[in-house]
Length: 180
Figure 1: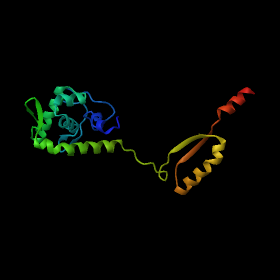
Figure 2: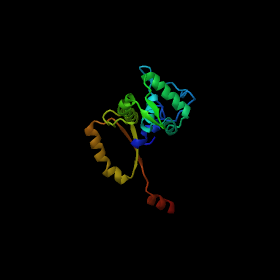
Figure 3: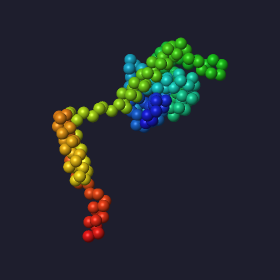
């Protein structure tokens, strides 16, 4: 997944819940996966709406989301039905936003950024509650010099992590042993 902000919504591929692989869409805009709904709105449609609002083009939004144009048109139809508003209307050769779509522009983008941030955030590591076990390879010298400081720090913080140590043999020592 791209970490770059301009691309993060594109990377959702109209599938907010599962972000590992892009969905395959049929001509009705359905991915064959269970959809997440909020007050009967398929939340996956918000990604499509964001792209259509941004690009003011059903075809360009479909291309950006790796969907067929007819699947994106179906998504627009479902959004129009849900919001009881045309959202995008053809004016000459271009699409214009309705006042409702214009009012939804920033809130929809904000919602999608918040979802992205929530999904991709990693919990902070807290050694006082973690029971993880760490395996550490280090030289005898580092064991004598560095580890007393590490042990004091861990004890002072009340850490519950476990450390396993292995000896790291330097290449020079290995070469010397082989020469004998």
